[in-house]
Length: 109
Image 1 (cartoon, helix red, strand yellow):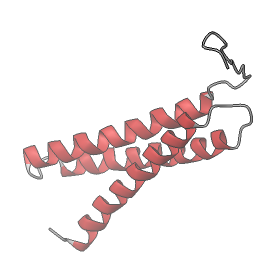
Image 2: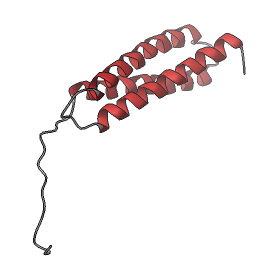
Image 3: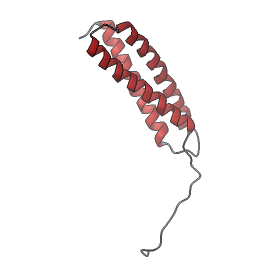
Image 4: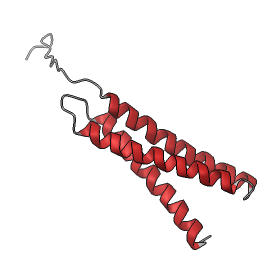
């Protein structure tokens, strides 16, 4: 193979719109988790009920991100990176919120 010979592979793959939506929903849930933790630490239980509502909404976002991520992973002719990342971020966010709810119920900490 000479130095001037280049090999190109053209593909018909595209970025999945549902994968992008899964990533966005997962990121919204994760960002809201970190903001809720920061605000609760900063205000020390002054906004506990509001943070509970934000947590519930963020868990809905994470669940929607998981469903959309699974749907995007089953599509054909798409780049799989964004749906995988969206699915992973949504699962991590869901687990973090479940941990906060578990800690709140059991009173640990």
